[in-house]
Image (cartoon, rainbow, N blue to C red; front, side, top):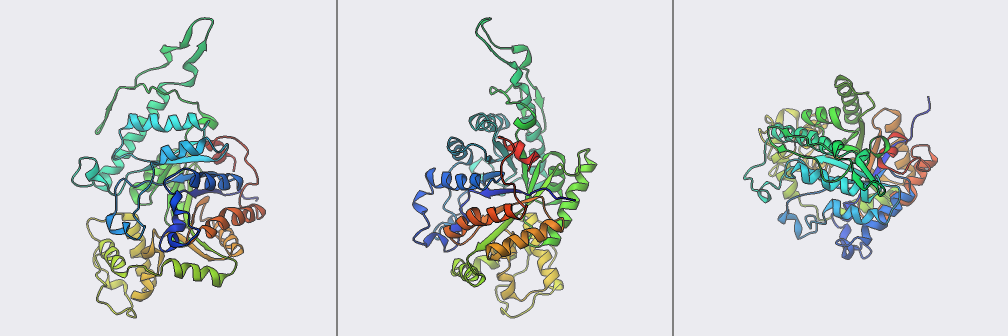
Length: 436
């Protein structure tokens, strides 16, 4: 059976500038607070026929990381994507908005406005947020259960608001003098556990089908999986190895079916961390140079927070056994990431030195490829053939050259291999998801 091409997105968070990458002479860091830098990336991604570009968001400043560039901060995702909309024609524009902190009416209007400005290319990356509470009059972050309960309620409200002002209500009839049919615009009168919203939304809906707004969810905890299976078109997840991805994809499909949806309704799109160069040796040199100043103290602190295990005094050559792990901490910043780290220790029983170099500790636990374009194509094909994914998100690392290789060389090679479309079959984000 012929397999469909994959869905591929490109991050607009400059992961290629992390570590020492931003210090390279060609990094272009001076442009990070303008739109030209990101428009160039979006145009390259569109030329490669990717499904979308997306901008993650953080609503707090990490001062501990600011000095070396990691916590610099950045532009509002939705405003940035509105600027990119004017400079592109086909590629989807996925913004990130937190359901924990944004009022649902503001959220609904903001994303529908982007949808109109981009002629149907907006998408919503639904996140609950991991921190930032003190910027929104809260002392503590709500529990994960509370955050997902809020997310479910906010998503329901947003969908009702989008439906409250249907496109059919717009008449614009000069002869009769009727601009809108008010009978079709109705309040939602929603009363929930967290919000009360009257409605209707003041921004009309663009319509359904190819003009609906895709919903993406990030996270792979038990609660997150169930939320994605109920409402999402795709889920982003950290899957450091293929077995994790296969299990997650099967589970999502099973849960989608249990919620009365088709098993293919929610697509699994892992993050793919890439360090690419002309040779594997050069790619490994790029990886080592990028992490030359990696802070072991911060890694030990992250391991302690996620597992409860203090390794700061352990020799680097000592192995960590599964029975060294204490019971999981009652409260962690990310249950998904903590679970992946614990799984890696139980499965591999690495030395302390090896653990400090693993993706579960080095970053966001993404699937990682360090090598050439051809090696990356082979790895994507291997995961696709194993049923481990429906697509993925490009997270280039190390340098601007690596980012350019991903978009200008890897993506055409994926098209040649039948793993990525050669051309778009529609003009909207939803059409890209439905017709890869």
